[in-house]
Image (cartoon, rainbow, N blue to C red; front, side):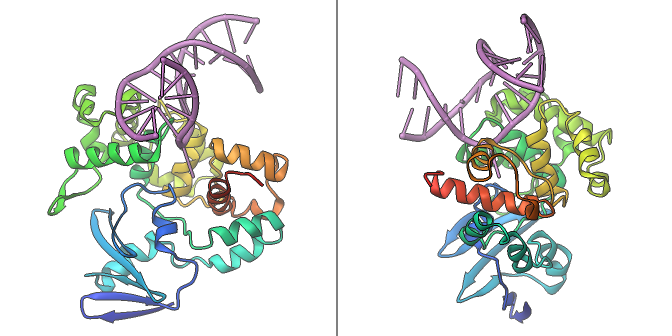
Length: 276
DNA sequence: AGCCAGGGTCTGC
DNA sequence: GCAGACCATGGC
């Protein structure tokens, strides 16, 4: 990967395994939207970003080298060698096929609180509505960054609200879960950043203490927000896929990178609807 | 009208 | 441990 400054923009050349549509619209993050041909905009870590892809070059618009090094390099997981991981997973034929379907996906390193809150909202819900609820959450309780663009509200801000305040989200039964999570995080009863360095099982035990957080939401938080690349969130699609494709047992070569394998399998399962 | 959506809780065996 | 009812909301 080569980094080239071009006016106000920062360009990434010679980068592999990074397709914007696959990474930004695969159900791991809910705040990115396509605003042009292969151009996306979104917010992370309180920063607005417009990012585009053309002829194999990824362009981060109006981005300094400092912001890239500080935020976006990590956020897009650009230091991880996905080609190597794909070759490890390819020891299994089915994983090889799934990986070829979805080789442009990178696991975003999202803010821990945003990941936790987003996947609480995701439970028994569909992606368009999840996006709508998170949109209202940010519009109503986040800080305005640029015109009409809002940051993800902090846990402290949400913890200061009441269930009635949250009614505007139309998040249904999930509102009480959001509130409990915000209170436990804001009070530092649960310190999310510390979970990054804990063993997977210990970290999960902490997260499921939150009302409305079960194993699946916890594992999504660990994978997408807390750098636990071996977390393996088991939603209905994954359960069906693992049963059908692997007789219920994930292949040995996938254990180390289970979270990445999970994304490939999820994408593959939904594309093919498992009619295979 | 009824079912489903990247689940979780609570109750009852 | 495991099944089943229930949970809000919206799209089809």
